[in-house]
Length: 289
Image 1: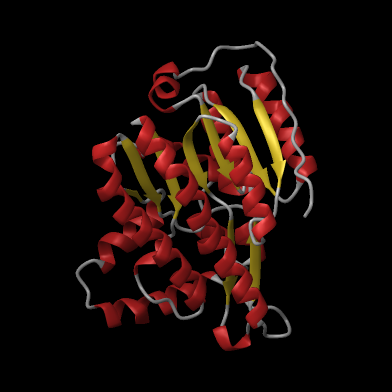
Image 2: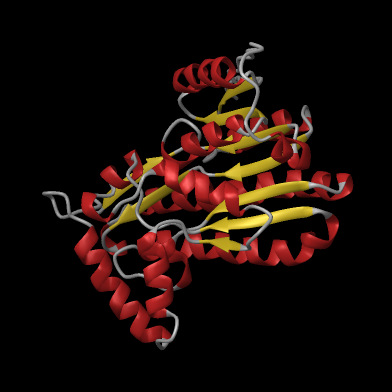
């Protein structure tokens, strides 16, 4: 089992801009998938609001750079944990880190996506996506939620997707994993709201990240990770599901009144317009963890 890498920095510099948020949820937040994209943007947003951070991803060097950045800019403590959430060892490393801190916020932003026909995708890649998108979320939420409930406060943010609400040809298994995440968040919110724990599903449309580039998403359809992060954290404690960005909201409103089979047909067309194919005809694969 690989040893986790972590770095602690304690520079007493500028005061956080939102002490009320830190008092409500703090003192620590754990953010997975923090080396890139939405996870990175959310880590910066939480540090700006005064929470100490454990940032998790596979790329330890990037995480250590982020830890130094957040400590220097916001005067918070930040620990970097290099772990692969597609493995039992990686999930165990995060579990041990969580056990060592009073975690007020968990953000499960690590993700793995594919685009293209399921029959053209290697089954091993689909199994790995299931492990990262679902099994690791189950492990981490299963560990942190009882601790938050016993303490009587906390926040859990799960990264869903605009594709989570219907079957989506061209992204069939990815959409299915996000449907699982969405359903889990909705159920947990109902169970935990009376125990002081806020649960939020964030369901953005395409975001301008490495994930989107590797999945061959057209640039004109994307919004920034910073917008997603800000709208997501603003919604914690106020909504059960937030749909950051105009495309996510538009799809939600326009599809809501249609029969489910028609939604599937329309989403297939949307995916065809947003994604490209590799020269060999295979699916695009976009790991961000």
